[in-house]
Amino acid sequence: MVQAYILIQTEVGQAAEVAGRIRGIEGVREAHDVTGPYDVIVQAEAEDVDSLGTLVVARIQRLEGIARTLTCPIVNI
Image 1 (cartoon, rainbow, N blue to C red):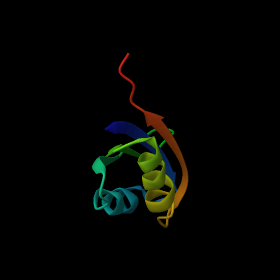
Image 2: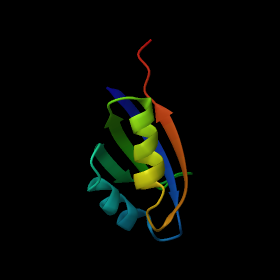
Image 3: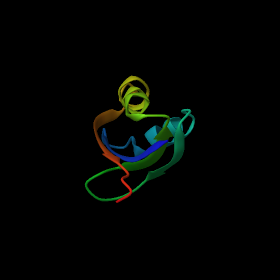
Image 4: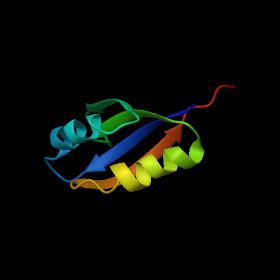
């Protein structure tokens, strides 16, 4: 299992709506609208790195109101 934090910048005024839509996506554990340089922070999980990429590119980035994402995989060192 691969886990990651996905940091999202939204269009102005869209953070709460985007976070709400993301919460309904399979593989998303949590989604919170926050303040700072990013508007939404998501914790997600997938079977492998390829599946995580598909989750981000095909499911999350295509949502209306998202301007940019940054995916940060969790590593266990």
